[in-house]
Length: 121
Image (tube, rainbow, N blue to C red; front, top):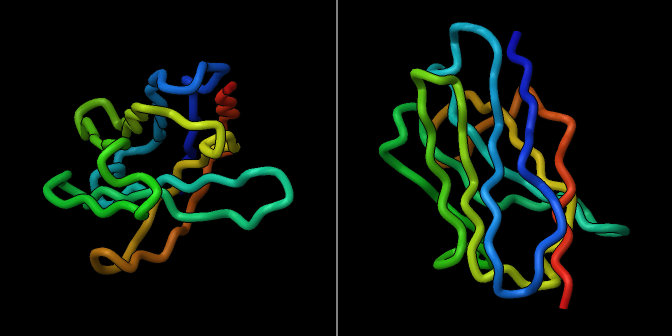
């Protein structure tokens, strides 16, 4: 069992940056790939990006490429989402998820409760 808690969301102006964190419980954090997803009001949840178990590989949605960076610290059971050059369309609830399987098509077994990111124009 893995419990995930996101933090770091908030209100930011367009062009600004935010760094989201996702803290995981348990000793098996490094056994999971970690993905970030988001869901805007009245929209489907969408993939943002993922980092492999040891952090050697990352994959991003086109909307995130060049602006977002995922990293992880396995010693601290934490994964990060650095978001730069934020746009109003990035406004959403952001979720982290722990995935099993093979890069990059993981099965996400555990989910956090989400953190709100609001980007004002």
